[in-house]
Image 1 (cartoon, rainbow over the protein chains, first blue to last red):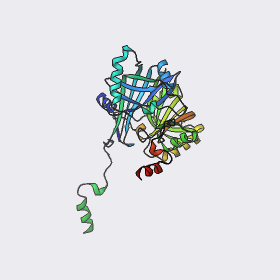
Image 2 (spheres, chains in turn cyan, orange):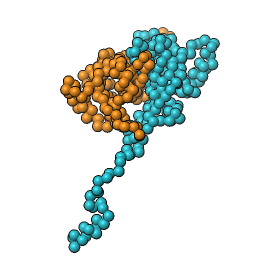
Image 3 (tube, each protein chain N blue to C red):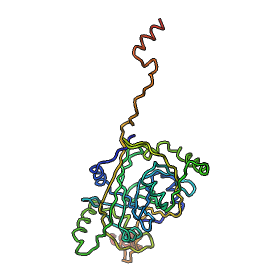
Image 4 (cartoon, rainbow over the protein chains, first blue to last red):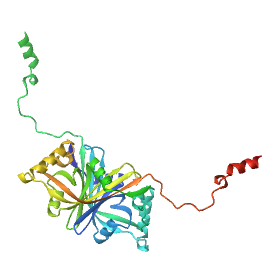
Length: 174
Length: 174
């Protein structure tokens, strides 16, 4: 297995075909990571949540990191890491256009938001939040099937692999 | 779909059957999240890496967060979030016993460490690091198939569902 750096285009392709991401935020240098569903659109990842720890922390510190991957197997995988910035899209006229963009993206996956919005038994439904992450920088790595290139072996090959070996064996047998 | 808080035992079971985790660390309040392979053993998660950004950051700030999940589908999933502390296990006599524990765990998955240890083309093989994360606290959520419980309907049921409906129908037919 060989590991390659992914090009920017390959990173974008993975973001476009995957909606499941792991979002890391941090407060007082304590990181926190959770799975979320996002939609990639023009250098932003759009998401939906109910109020909770991650929203509270991202409001305090908008620096975030997301990881999106495709682990078909331990030898066939790709992983993209995004560094970005949290931006909330509140229901006010200023954000109307962006909320419409988000809404259109979310409509493509009618079920996707349920894990974020279904309350735990005994809990009230909490206010829902629409947000996006501006992608500042991203890097990706992927595996490939190419064999690992090793330097050519300098040792003398065994006798049976050297030219004329069959002639020499027959001569000994005769 | 109903979402449940997982018990401590359910969280441990998920950690025990999954080796793929997402590890978040942070430096100067900038989070960083990457996929890693870990082995769960007695309140610790054991891992292996080559020197790089995450090791550098965890040496500076040992507070970490890991997420382990099982997304069979968007309606059947479980996710455990672990808050913990990074501890390096260097190759010195003091850590010999713990490195042996780690080594035995790693032997169960002969391929698992490859993504972390295969150098990118043109890069030198970097020193390998064995570490563990002490689990300080964890929480988990899972979905279940149970229908969402709604309050009982107070309306009068349709005639055919009220007691004595068959008698009444037969009386009409006779």
